[in-house]
Image (cartoon, rainbow, N blue to C red; front, side):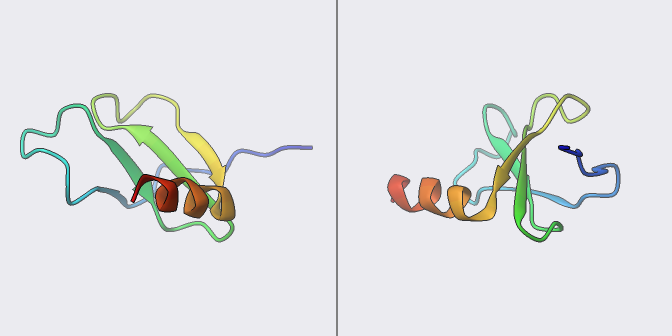
Length: 64
């Protein structure tokens, strides 16, 4: 069974490369062991994508 984590108390952060106005970027939370919640900064109350930590690390590494 797949359970979604409770994200209401998550601390979200944006990339240091995001623009100052906060448009068109994603936010992630480091509060959850083993997973990385990802959301659209323009829709903070919308759904979050849940990614396994290893997959997120591989994704970020491939962008560098």
